[in-house]
Each structure stands twice: as C-alpha cells, then as structure tokens.
Image 1 (cartoon, rainbow, N blue to C red):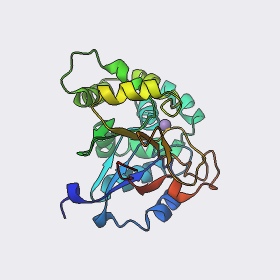
Image 2 (image 1 turned 90 degrees about the horizontal axis):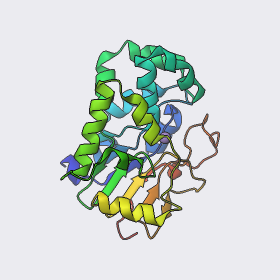
Image 3 (image 1 turned 135 degrees about the vertical axis):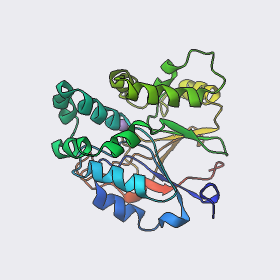
Length: 242
Ligand SMILES: [Mn+2]
C-alpha cells in the first residue's frame, strides 16, 4: 500500500527512551502504518540519537522538529550552549555521537516543523501558536513558509530564535480563541501536538476534538518516571469526528 493510504500512527515526545518507544510501537508494524513523530525524540533519556536514527529509518515515517532537537543542534554549533542544553536533559554522549554523524545532522536540520494531512489535520510539536511570529500575512502557503523558515534558520545559526518561539508551554487546551485563530491561519480542521506532558492514560482531546495532545510523558526519565500509559503518547490518529 502507498504510504499515503496507510492509517496514521502518532508518536508523541520520546525523549530518548527507546525501550518504552519499542514497547509502545509493538502493536503497530511499520509496514502497516504511516508513522508521524511529533518531535522531542532527544534529551532526558539516554538514547536520544538512537531514537532519531530509529525514527529516520522506520519505513513510512515522518519526523517533526521539537524544541529539544533545536537545542541539541544549537549546542552542536555553539559550545557555549552546551551547559544550557544539558540543563534541559541533554546527554553529553548524544552530542558527541551527533558530532560524528554529519549525514544525521544534515537530515535533522532538514526536518519540517509541521505537516498537514489531506483530512485537514495539522501536526506540529508545540500546542501553541508561537510559530505565528514567522508569518507576516503575505504568504499564500503558511505551512511551507514556516517550514522554509525553520530550514533556513537551522542552516544559518538561527537556532536561538526557533528555541524562543517553541519553548513556551502549550496554550491551546486553555485558549479556544488562539486555537481557532491558529486553525484558520493554517487552514486546518484540527491540530495534533505534543510538547507539554498531560496526565491522561490516552491522548488528551480538547475543544470538540480540534486539538489533541499526544505527549503522555513516555520517557522513564521524564516527568512521570515511566508510570505513564504507553497509549498516552503513541496511538492511531483519532477519526476527525471523534
Ligand atoms: Mn517540547
């Protein structure tokens, strides 16, 4: 089956926990699903670069940029940022491994910030509209403009600006006005994101299903210390009517 015809599997923030990622993916063989990783595969857990390589190599998969990938790339380019990056869970050996793997660096810098599916679902790392600051209102295609801005920034030392706009906490669950404005701007029916961990056993649904949070705190070294349900972070994209 062509990848675009496969059912969509969403993977929230992995944060370096390959063991729990593999457990969560077990019911979903790669050849039967189109897998979309929502970013933040690195930091906290010990296998950040391993998680990136796994996601890159998994068939029928897309990987979005999270703020932790941006911080890792920032530390890679500018050693004065290493201390900060380690303070947000960076693992020194991941930085060293990435430094030795230029093709992986190149691949990571070219990941999109967001995707839109044919059914109008927008997928992005953050559950907020911080990406709006990259638009000036003149764009015909906002999504392509945002992804181009990310790619250019990561090719030219602009990680700090991306970090600033991404690293604020999610707002869509509590701010229907901003959610509605964002969906209109992006010509989307709903938005699916991770970034700020929720505490539910399933992905959290807000505002009649127009916003979904798939960051269930998967990583053992993350906020819920391995006590989160795997299905809180990894599962099929819900039906649009759901
Ligand atoms: Mn994040």
